[in-house]
Amino acid sequence: MSDQSVSRSKGTARREWLSFLFITLILLPGITVLGVGVYGFTVWLLQMIYGPPTGSL
Image 1: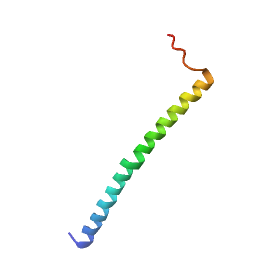
Image 2 (image 1 turned 120 degrees about the vertical axis):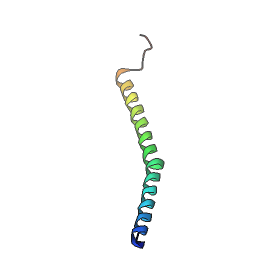
Image 3 (image 1 turned 135 degrees about the vertical axis):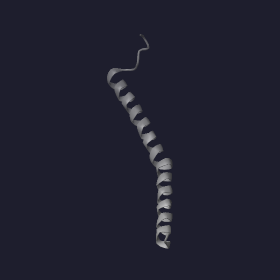
Image 4 (image 1 turned 60 degrees about the horizontal axis):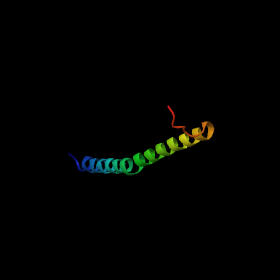
């Protein structure tokens, strides 16, 4: 392999690692927190409209 292709593959590997770290440390936890927040807001909103659960079957 030429020197240029080796440096290009090192740059690509670095970019892949940075992408992996961004996805696993920032993106997925952020999506998870957002999803839980949307679910909680939805439950709260529905309880405001329909009232709290009665507990009877």
